[in-house]
Image 1: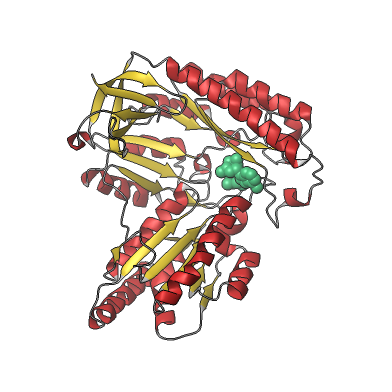
Image 2: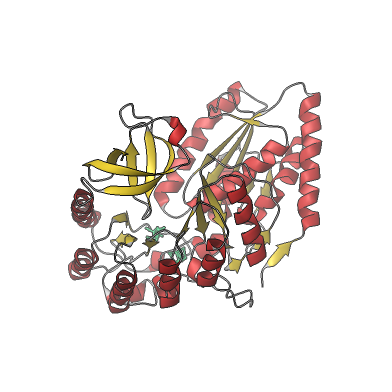
Length: 467
Ligand code: 5AD
Ligand code: SF4
C-alpha cells in the first residue's frame, strides 16, 4: 500500500502558502512565476500542482524569464537529450539572475531525483536555490519558505518509494482538456528505463478520489479527460478494492455529461480483453490505445525485460481491432538498443508494416546511468543507429500519410480543443481516436463537439471545416 500524505500535512503546506502570500503583499508586489515543463504528461500534471501552490501564494504567471521572480523548472530524465536541454536553459538563467538578484530558481522532477544529477546541480549550478524530486513536490511551499527565510540552498531528494498526496491545489492549462492521474510510479523495470528509479513503485489513487476529481472536472466544463499513469493497466493491484482499470473506466464513463475519456500509457503485458471490452462498450472512452512496442525482435524484447513477445503483441492488436475496427493504435519504439542487429531491426520494421500504426514515437537508445541496459555491450556504430532511425521514421511517415489520405472527403466528429496560431485554420480539434484536425472557424467553437469534413490530409495532421 502507498504511503498517503495526510490532509493535515497538505493543510500545513497551504498555511505556508498563505504566510508567503502575506509576506509578498507586505513587500508591495505580487510575484510573477514561471513554470517550465519538460517530458511527459505526468510532468505536465505535476506542473499544474506547482502552479496551484504558486497561485495560493498570490503569484501570477509569466513566460518571460527576465520578468519572473520565481522560476520552477520541472525536468525529465528519460533520455540524455532531455537533460541536456534543461541544463542548457538552466545555465542561461545565470545571466538572468545576475540582472535580477532576488530571483528564486527551483528545479524539480525526475532528473533531479537522480543522485548524480542532484550532485551536479549542487556543484555546478550555484544559481539554483532549491531542488526537489517528484516525491517532495507536495512539500514545495515549505521548501520555498525555508529558502526565503535565508536558509542555505535546499535539496530535498527524499522519499524514493513514493507517496500519494491528495488535495494539492491545481491550476490547469486551458479549459477543455484536463489530466487526471490515476496512479504514480512503475514496477516494470524495463532494462533501459530510469522511471522506476526516479518515480518509485506503483501506487494507485483510491477510486473515490479519482471519481470525485472526474465529477468536478465535468462540472467545471472540461470535455476531454486523460487518465494518466506509467502503466494504467495495472491500476488498482496495490489497493485490493477489486477495481481494476477496466472497471475504473466504466465508473468514469457512467458520470453523466458530454465528455471524452482518454488514457495512457498501456503496457502490452497487462492489456487484457476485459480492457478492450470496456473500451468498446463505454461510449465516452476514445477508440485509441497507446501500446508501446519498443522492438519487434523477441530477442531484444527479452533483453529489454518487456515480458511479452511479438506473437503476444500481434494477437493483442488483432483482438483490439476485432472488437473496435476503427481503433487508433499508436506506439513507442527504441532503435539501437544494445546488441540490436540488422536482423533485429528488420523484425521491428516488419512489425510496423504489419500493425500499421496511426502514429509512432521513435527514439534512439539513450543509456541511463543505473539501469541494466547502460551496462550492456553496445557495439553498433552511431551512424548505423541513425540510418535505422531514419528508415523507421520514413516508414512511419509513409503509413501515417496513407492513413490520413483515407480521411479525405469524410465527415468525422471532433472535439474543438484550442487555437493553432494558424490564420487559415485557427482551431485545433481531435477525433474520437485522438487524431489532430486543424479547423477553420471561430473561437466560439472551442469546447464543442462538432462534425467536420476533412478537406486536406498531410503526414502529421488533417485539415477540415464544419460540415
Ligand atoms: N532511451 C531511449 N528511449 C527511451 N524510452 C524510455 N527510456 C529510454 C531510453 N533510455 C522511450 C520508450 C518509452 C518512451 C516514453 O520513451 O520508448 O516508451
Ligand atoms: Fe519505463 Fe517500462 Fe515503466 Fe514505461 S513501463 S515507464 S518503459 S519501466
